[in-house]
Length: 239
Image (cartoon, rainbow, N blue to C red; front, side):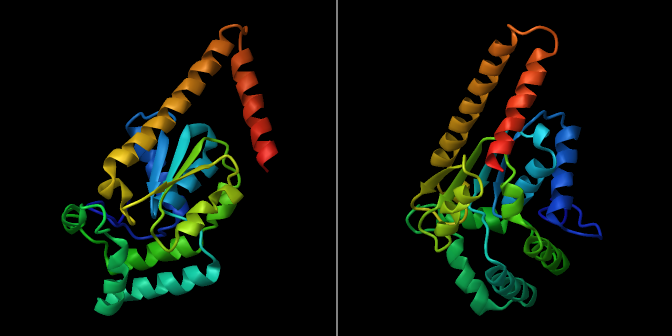
């Protein structure tokens, strides 16, 4: 992402739409066709936005420990965190540190090493990115998702109820709870995380194979028309 890690931080907006277009451009550059998007934390609304703007280019979506919050909660919590990071307020940062690692996983040192090796974003990037988060309608975009959706959340966290609430907006979403982990699930419970992703991949692959088999009996452009019609009907039902 622009402004994160070792990626350049150009001037301009840092909205979820801009991030989504960055990911789309990278996928096109790498010639990745209809990927399954896996978004963690900030990556959740970015992946949501990409799937909303370009539904025909996404095969599935995995939302990892990122979720909807009310406007009041978002404004208060994000502003507090942004200001703490910009001004190095240790009291607030120490409180948020409890989101980083769980003593139950036995991976605390490993997670700390990974995070320490990742360059932190600038104060300007932090401010711009959190503004983009606060002004993005996650649930509105999620309500139009037609692709398979898997939600993975740390059930020991105080925001777990918000993870469980995703099916209110995406009725076909599957929600899975991961124990002995906090925010960085993929680092603390990698085997469990990878197994869940692999299961989704297999389901999507099996569905694609079935669609191809059905299409072999159709003539001309019948397959494309039938799949498009089925997808439209699915979206209409969900809306």
